Length: 144
Image 1 (tube, rainbow, N blue to C red):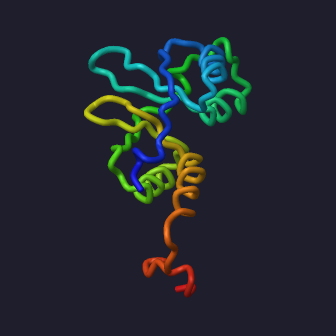
Image 2 (cartoon, rainbow, N blue to C red; image 1 turned 180 degrees about the vertical axis):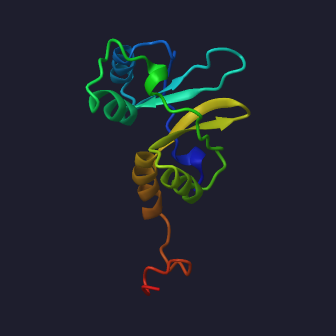
Image 3 (cartoon, rainbow, N blue to C red; image 1 turned 30 degrees about the horizontal axis):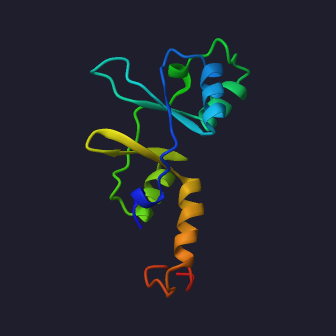
């Protein structure tokens, strides 16, 4: 199974100068858990602001949603995922970098977002349709 099979096409963009309140309202309106942050100029890269960023960096610190700016709490640089990446590799990438989601990029364009929730929900659904067998690489069965 590949990232392209699990990614969501529901995502939106915001600017780094937007307030966190504006970002939250946009996330709520579009029912998404992250926004891709547009580059400031042609030499800049995209960022990402997630619900987790907002909780950890604004809510937990007593920050002001109207004063805090997206660029102050976003995550940058981005870890990006190629649509052809195997879902196990994507899961390891997210886990090893303590991320919950990453943009899926094809030929320099963001085409989707993949999250740990996508991997769990859609990945388990797909695995239910596949024949099951013992994975010889899984040493947790023998405890070694």
